[in-house]
Image 1 (tube, rainbow, N blue to C red):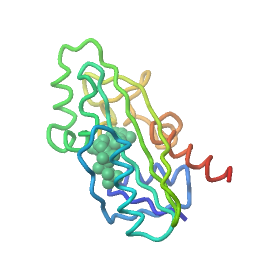
Image 2 (cartoon, rainbow, N blue to C red):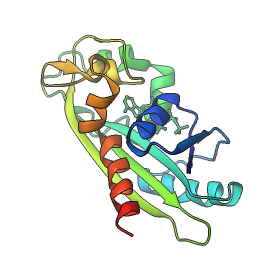
Image 3 (cartoon, rainbow, N blue to C red):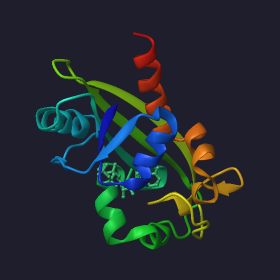
Length: 177
Ligand code: ITT
């Protein structure tokens, strides 16, 4: 059993789809203002390893848009809560290059163990309009091929997503020990 410290139910369901034996803990941790997701995850791991005894994981994600030079990146949660998907679409009005990448950095530790990081990336394009009702966050405006992520079910998203990749990397590592 792994404790997944997150306030995001969607993330938790995706992790459960891959790991099975995982429990959501919404105890919170400080997300520092840093230039990279890795720094946020490393710092967060210190706090959650002290708070919870047992195997524990956190996951920090961000959307990096090419034509905005990587924005919103490490500010993705704040930007989503303020300008949201409509705001992102407005920023990209008239933009021909709509490539974007989701990145996921997962931190994992057991008591007495140095935290480990597992990563994943997911390339796609920002749509012109939101589509679909599944997933969460930026899913309705991020498309791969014909579909946005919000038009996929959880299993389909997990096979190709940034988080699917980082969680699968953790799973492989756990089973290879
Ligand atoms: P935590 O409690 O785990 O931190 P959070 O929702 O704040 O949950 P992040 O800081 O990692 O998670 O996410 C940054 C933002 O990016 C946030 O607004 C998410 O909704 C969004 N996001 C993260 N992963 C996503 C995904 O797979 N699809 C769409 N949006 C995503």
